[in-house]
Length: 189
Image (cartoon, rainbow, N blue to C red; front, side, top):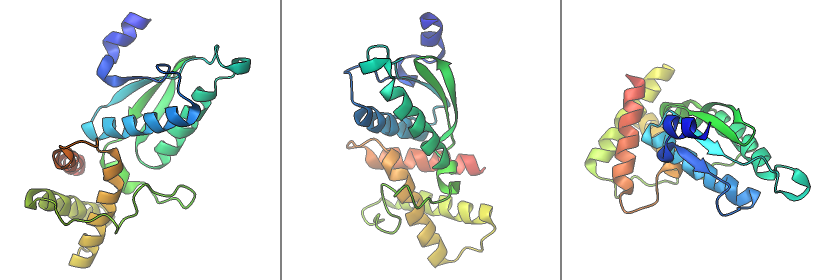
């Protein structure tokens, strides 16, 4: 089975949460960041290895339960489209298209990582701003909303606020953002 998994998912599409023996909170944080990055990259299906919990105190799989709870939460937030048990120690996760981030309803219980309207468009290149505007216009059109400058601006901030948490935090942030915006545009086409 392991050889089959390596062929099917490969190391780039596999997250092994057993490495380093993280706490449930650390594993959840690491998994969410990784899944959001994979979504932005346009990865379709990934494997998240949680372990069975056989080495946990009392044999209770703490990390597995925390990750399953996270997967349900990320489904509601437009990151995960589906997940299933791959084996007793892993989940196969199908990631949602980037567009799903915009279509996911806001939830009061889950405060967003970045509040729309607080993310600044200042400092973005003209190309990035143009891509962001195109995504906002397509999003509004998909909702049947007549776009005007105020609505487009609000939608640009909303989309930016939802997508930034999934971008890798490195010196190529704007490049990653442009790739995500192009993926969102492709989703609308």
